Length: 158
Image (cartoon, rainbow, N blue to C red; front, side, top):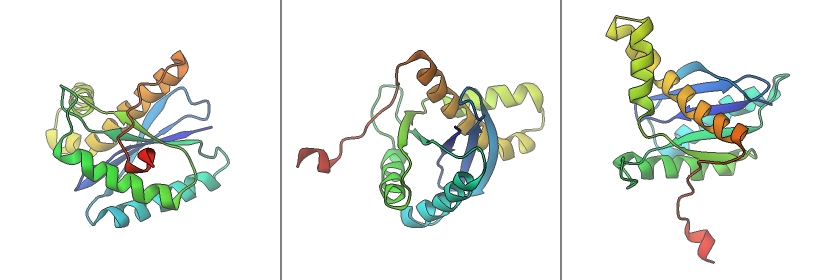
């Protein structure tokens, strides 16, 4: 079954899909960000529902979890957590937060090898970042270990 990779950004959201075997990630598309966490979650839920209905289905959602190199949260970390909280109320699939440190830099480097025009690269960057995040997750699954991050939730203390 396939997995969906998401690189959330305030302006653009990159999406990537794995193949049906869950071994390889590929860039899929970029959708506009904007709006609050509930709006973004609703947009993503619509994409997820459409993918679930396809013959290859969908088994998991992998969302890039932004952290600084030293592991501390960034300004974007809480935004991702809010989107995930809303998304969990809209979909039943497992949602995994995957460390995304340096994924955009790696995507930019890979794209620069194929595309010299930075304007064209910019259009592809978010989906390429999502593919790198998803591939990291898939590689961890293949090795039998998970490099997942679970943010602290108040519900866990109850």
